[in-house]
Length: 238
Length: 238
DNA sequence: CGGGGTTTTGAAAAGTATCAAGGCTTGTGG
DNA sequence: CCACAAGCCTTGATACTTTTCAAAACCCCG
Image 1 (cartoon, rainbow over the protein chains, first blue to last red):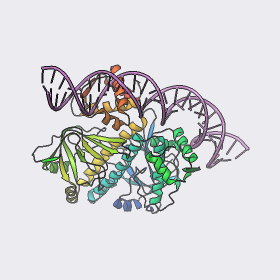
Image 2: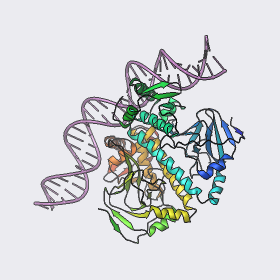
Image 3: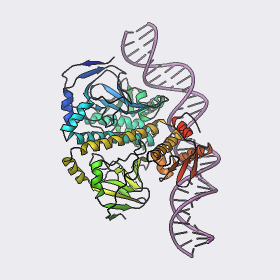
Image 4: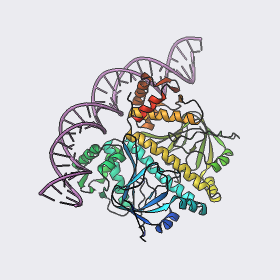
């Protein structure tokens, strides 16, 4: 059961802006200020913010935790389109209904802004439209990167690319680049990369056996970043 | 060699707005009027409007012909991100450089609008930003659809989905839905769907042998639309 | 300490890519 | 008008990658 919880908790501005698994949008300046005054909703693992096809009543900004954004086929197959972490916007887009589902991958907090409020803001602030344009451009770029990864890379290249992008995200946030947290399940990663959990697992095993990474619970460590990039680029096999 | 050709040729407003292979943007209202007064550039097959990484000096609207939008990996593998036909905008996006290459798949004409002019328009017209936001939202939706197709469908489902979407595009344009033009090469289709040309060809052969389609030069005919949708949905194999 | 879910591992099967060659189209030039 | 050349498309045989099915190992939490 979802709960609304009032709290004056400021969103820490995370300085990372990776080109990749980030499919959710980065905060839009004017929006951030407005959102800071909005109520916080608390979610537990597997709570859904919304589902594909739902009316777009609100947009959200992640305060804490991580979300998995995905679409489902009638037969149950799933494509994860992105992961959203603290600072990311979820639910932007001009349509009247959500084009994907958003689910908390663990305990999480979001701020919510009614879609109507966003429209009012757009009428009043002539710059907001261009800021939203900018945010969507970045989302588009991220999905195009993912499309290339899924459409043209083999399993090892996909997994290595994924780890490398997370590592680079850390570097941008001035965190150690060699420790990569994996808050999502193998299944989430597989559905993101267009693989099966077994293939993801096997590939991680091979990378570990090659001495390129080491596995630990909840995270992996990159032992040889150059080799990882070589694998991602297809210049080295595992 | 590319040539600039002045002509007062009005862009015919094509009524189609498919959710799918359309990755290029639909014209934005205020933009259309402005573009109608811009010069027309004439291109021949394989002429490139721009390449990935080029400075974004102009944006374009297709007047005639078709364009292939794609990204390349260092090793030459290619992912086609979309096809642009008459009426579509090419090159929209907030970044300073192009994120993909655009190549004419045959003789083509475009109108070009300098990027600076677009920025000036945005400053003057407060609605333009939201219209661009809208256009990018649609592009994003199209790429997400494609991502799902490439990441989670098998070869037969991908090809059937592709043909079905082209058919539906025709229906929306009040053209016969059973005749589907294929102005692009098998290679373009393969690079769009994340397959090889051989697999695309084999799949078309199977669909033809099943009596679902018939093949002709430059187009295919859909003989059994229901069966095609079943194949696309994975409810029927070929 | 136990139990459910996740992750890893193995063996076999299926699907797609690769390599190779032949056929078809289209446009060109004799 | 026909022959030819070049590129595109199709088809076949084979190899490889990834999935599928199955089971064991691991981990976290109560």
